Every structure is written in C-alpha cells, then in structure tokens.
Image 1 (tube, rainbow, N blue to C red):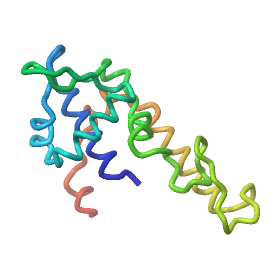
Image 2 (cartoon, one colour):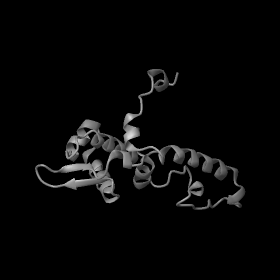
Image 3 (cartoon, one colour):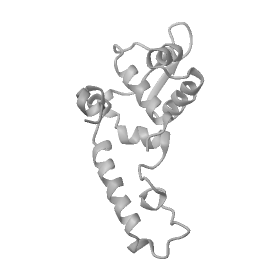
Image 4 (tube, rainbow, N blue to C red):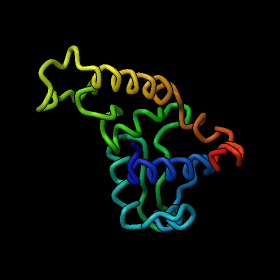
Length: 148
C-alpha cells in the first residue's frame, strides 16, 4: 500500500513537473498547492533530492526542481525510494526478501506465490510509467470514483 509519504512525494513531483524549465518552487508553495504538511514535505523532498530525483537551490531565487526530465523519472523508482519494496509482504519482495516466521516452506507457500504475482503486476505498471505519463494520466470518471 502506498503510504502518505509516497503519495505526498508523488504529488510534489507532479507539481514540480508542471514548472517551466529552469524554474524552481519553494517547499511552502508546493505544500500549500497540494495540501501537504510543510514539515513532512521538507523531509520527503530531501529524500527525493538525496535519491537523485530533485535538485535544490538556496536563496531568494531558490527552491526545488526536477533533476532530470520527467520522462526519465520512473514512478516505480520513486515509490521504492520513499516507501521501500513494492511487494505487499516481505516474502514476496525481490530486493528485500525476508521469510515469514510462521512459514515452513516459502517456495510452496500459496500466499507468497500469490503476493509475488501481485508484486510483479504492480512492477510491470510502475516500472514502465514515467513521471510524464503519470502526469498525463486521464482522470477517472465520477462513476468509478464513487465505486458505482
């Protein structure tokens, strides 16, 4: 499940992807536009910068900007940087596998096998989706949002 940290990080990247080339945005402005707590966003943006997704500049003309074009930023990489592995449970992770304490045989565990399929399906979408594509994703109709 995507945490608030991951969701807010994606919102901030979408916001920054909308800037003109060479333009930067202050944390306060990003937080206000996206209804994100500023202190929490400070931490998220620092983590995104440390993972190479953002660059920052200090001073009156400072702020944050994408460090590379939006079509070179993969959504799966962003989520992993902020939230860790995509797998819904540790034993289904490819990068952070950890066997369950109560599992006798991870190789034949039906829960692990099924959750690995879920992980693979998520990765197939998120690891091929760029920030450019993410920003351009069409809004669902109100019927789908309302669950009808």
